[in-house]
Image 1 (cartoon, rainbow, N blue to C red):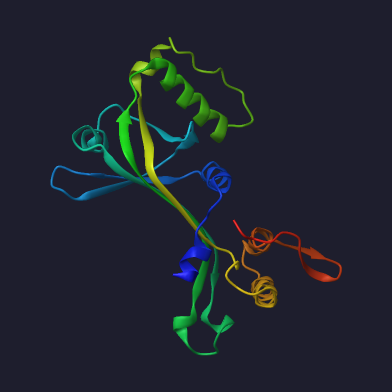
Image 2: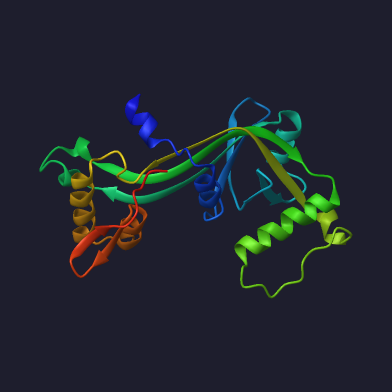
Length: 210
């Protein structure tokens, strides 16, 4: 139980920031036969809700109309930690550094054109921050051609493992091993863990406790 507590993201600001840095989330609904349907979606987190745009017809739309209890999940794999980081031969020691957010909520289809426009503009701002488009107005005809799914969280939990569960000296050893392995995400992982590379080696600049 103590480890689970150390892996929980307690900062709502960190959860919000993480959600709007990620480009793909997965929405889960229940189909007509009682099976979960999981669909990857572009999304934005705004007004404490998840917004997604969709074609106006389809299975997920029908699912939400019949049963508005949905799930939503976002995750980021930071770094795979090979087993030999901990033991020369024991494969069970392999691990992963990650961040994830899981939401249980109420799914609705937005009918109000003002809220539809708000959601679509927020999506554009997230995915096309360089601009070069005209903002959608609440009287635009395009609003009739798209569905906006809104998930209002009833429960939102974040988990992360970036070395915060380890004592400082073990964090440094792990960071050095990640740098030595030199995966394509190694430098980004080191930064997320709270380290920077200096002329004197690795230096912790931020305690990675969220």
